[in-house]
Amino acid sequence: MPKKRILIIDDDSRNIFALTATLKARSFDCLSCLGAREALDILRTDEVIDAILIDMMMPDIDGYEAIPRIKNLANRQNTPIFSVTAQAMVGDREKCLQAGATDYIAKPIDVDRLLSLLSGI
Image (cartoon, rainbow, N blue to C red; front, side):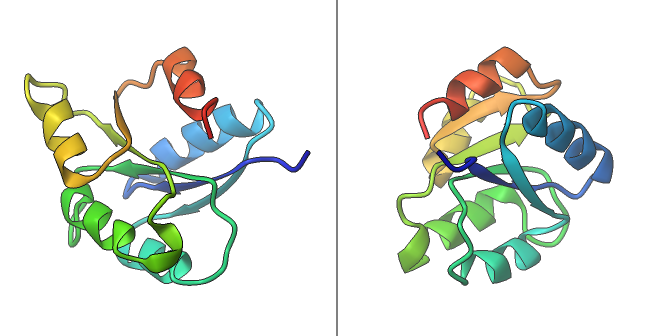
């Protein structure tokens, strides 16, 4: 069975490093980029991506703007998108889901919850 491939979109390379290390240790394959523009370029191709982890607070194009753009790509309409954010205020989860995210996880990441979310892909 091939490894599931996760695209990590985050403007902080430390977050990418931590998520990649965590996921690779659990037999996921990871691809990453530092912004939504680069991610959209990747997602327009036939690159195999089983799920997306996207930071919601990024310069240029934030997750709230990027998620609908991703969902509008014909080849990505069914790709699960999990918003990852330090925003953990009342209503933030709903705001992420309203933008089109499949689900939401707050920083600092609860690894067990993340793995639970990814177990469904």
